[in-house]
Image 1 (cartoon, rainbow, N blue to C red):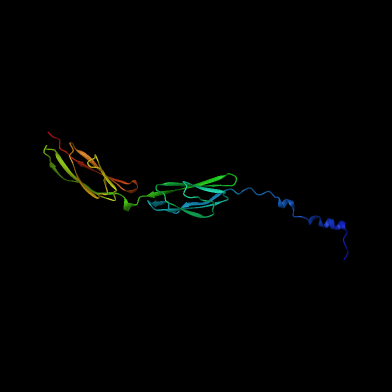
Image 2 (cartoon, rainbow, N blue to C red):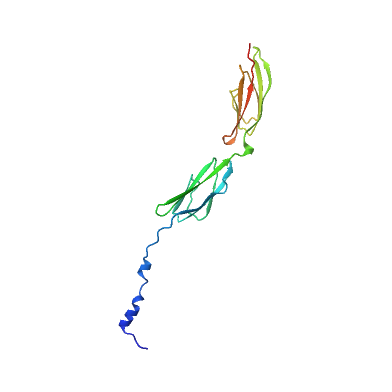
Length: 203
């Protein structure tokens, strides 16, 4: 086999050196835009005292946060976290990219009352009346309630009662008066019922 001269070898090997420097040092592509690929609540309405889950997915995110905060969260393609709102709550997910750009999405979870625990007034009535020694009428009123932690009356005829499912009391109004029975239950729920006691005008 005929030997090649050094000059020929130099020409042939001119392109066999290190990889193309332009490929190795090609500028890194601009960061892809940050995206929220999913953000939703499993239940848009929950019953008081129960929970639901918020699920989210982000792409090209450096960090994520949830307002109001529930727990520490991090970028994920698919993650769900438990939430237990006490009142109607608007949750906002914000994802931030590596160069400071950010995107946000929101979802609102409503909270409905547990009908089985709402306070109820089952009765509020006049049971009888009688005259006192001065001839003024004394009325006997009674009430019945359910799921009430506190029972009161306006105008006040007795101190607030706690845990009383039934009660009876007397009033001696000087004129026709409308009484309002108030039954307070859990989570701030209130039931009201009015009863008018008619007092004849004295002549």
